[in-house]
Image 1: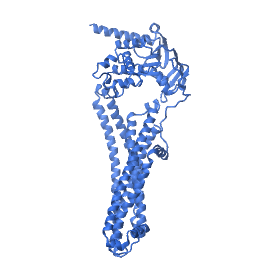
Image 2: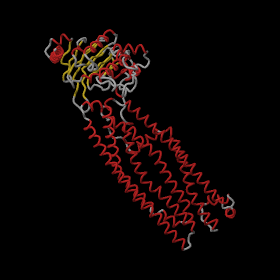
Image 3: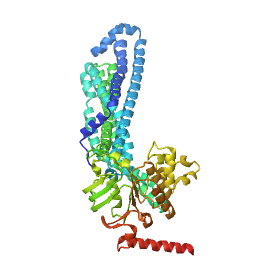
Length: 607
């Protein structure tokens, strides 16, 4: 995938994306501010009670705190009612709990809202990305990006962003309280904080590449798992369980090693930051005791500064983890941004919706994939509505590429593809694909009932129309033979059906569309010759419009109005079966080989 834009651009795009849930993060920030205020009030109340009320000493408190004391009745009144400071501590702790609840709830609402919006945006981009982009991407890696990477970004915004706000607010509130009380001790209490901040910054920079390596290792492991689960039949058929297990174990070991390296780095940081934090607390306590012995400060002030110092060290220690998580979230967001900025299928032409009857024309069409050589060379043929064209060729001769061009999954590098005289590049994409039905050699069926899979061709089709399409595809009686009939559940990717059954269900799904152009891309390869013949006869009896048959079987192509023979991306022969069978060339050679194989098979069966 291509490299995306700058970090600022990525976060700006995410900020626009979560416009519907920004207010929750704002409410969470307000709750964080209130929680920080209430957190610092409890030690202050205790210190004031010990020194100001019980000890009768004057304290240099902030003006807003002195105003609260006067509003409560003054120092003498509080000395006579010591239960009031205790009640104040309980009230402050209760307020702190309420603020913490609202902070967690609002941040959760914002985080989950962001995750939903991000997943929706990712899925919209994925379903609209060009076919070529998907072919160049790994399915397992895309799944990992849309799950694990989204979760990483959500966790950072929901949790770590609140910790950033909490750390900033706690530092500012602590300084506003500590500076008026004793400036030198305040400077001592903050003396190691710059060291901790610098250490955290360099730590976050150092682990950035390790986060990406671990993320990519997890993506590779997810890809291997996804491929093995979806290709389990192939794995078992070729007895590849041991080799695939060894491959997954190797990828899992690599992911484990890179994750352990990350944990080692985090352990080093937490250990070192613990030492710095405890040194900060010890320095404040020693300095406070020394000043208290000299009579410069009171015992309550020592208690207050010791408590505040420990409360300050934790959010500062968290700063390293926050910066590390920011790096990890940025790496994840960069991977997500590669999807969010993926190219989208565009309407390069005029977006027309012409009346499509089935006239198909390839005018000197050539095509080359971006990363390969030319596949098609000056392909030129015309197909009248209601006619059938057969296409034969060796593997790699460009047969399926013709279908891709017809459905505008790719654009010709030279020439034009016309439908009813209109360039397919000028036809609106969804309109074009609704009128060009296709059945692939390896059809994809969803994990739904057989009836629902057939109805995907036309959700408005009646039950009788679905049954008729299944009869034409010679699969109706097979479906009725299942215990639940059309309500039989199909396993993932159709694994509960045989290859021929899957192909016939896919044919029925395409026939329900009633498209004027039907393409069968070697989609009868898994059915027996008798069923193949029955399906073709049923198609002839039904007004299926223009038909394109791509096959390796001569028997499948025999009845086509015209047969095109592709070799090396060029049309080397064209004509009816009788004409081509009488000519020297690829068609005749294949015809001879298949006849000999059929005779050998019949002879073996007779013996």
